[in-house]
Length: 172
Length: 105
Image (cartoon, rainbow over all chains, first blue to last red; front, side, top):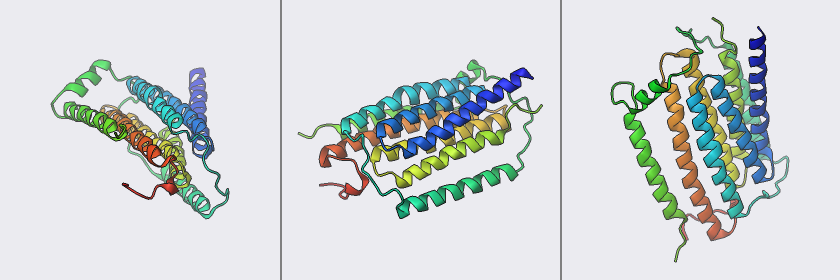
């Protein structure tokens, strides 16, 4: 019983971090701060993956997002020298319409989520996925295994590397 | 057995994140800030994949691998987008959306 309470508190903490910092990331006027809030959101997301017992996915999230993408963001913010966003009228029509769409959408979504009936899971839902199973699924070529998307992914990363170099290079 | 946290709570958290991203995507004026909003949207869909996999089909791995590949694709997308943004900055010296009118000079 004690454990359940602690786990619920941890989940509430992660959920609060995600909710608060994702709102702050889209409303903060300094872009560098917005990137930092995005980093907190991504940390809490990987915490959710660990909470779901997907440790591998959580580790990938930490490595790729928190380690790679945020660094890219910070460098590009500093390189383009645009820390301060231009001042806009606080209550413009566009902002009101966006707020209306957002709150309408979120109300509809939560209503649908809470009234939907989900199919029952057939097995125990808390087992950790074995690392050997992940490896075989990622590298196998049979039905339900993912070697082809894995290779397509590597081609995509190569193409994006070449494309990034080609786009961002200095014109002579 | 009842799970400790039921599935709806995860989905509510991810939908809050998704709509925060939508709001930022509409209202932001800076290209990098728009990219940050897109990142929020992508991450919330990743959470949904993992949660549906864990709670509805726990003996399969499809959702987890979809999140894994989605993380990779969004990393690639961010790299190219930031290259484009830096190139735009080099040409017009700022990255505000309303100043970008030409595709090529």
